[in-house]
Image (cartoon, rainbow, N blue to C red):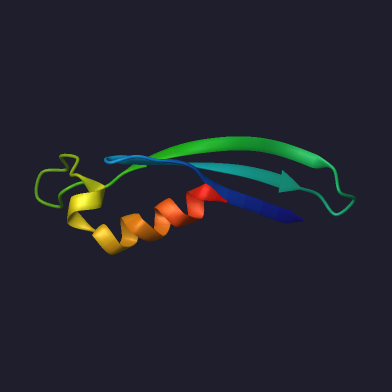
Length: 66
């Protein structure tokens, strides 16, 4: 079994990941996506990902270009 994952979209507040699961015979079994937000610990309000974690955001930007 193989899981392939990549950053589909990297925004200022949210990041969307995409996934594929392949079986041992090379057949694609399932495709999916998930959306993740960076939030403040105190109140769970979304924060500007690129302002709070600029190095992390930059790395995600580079990864999402591929």
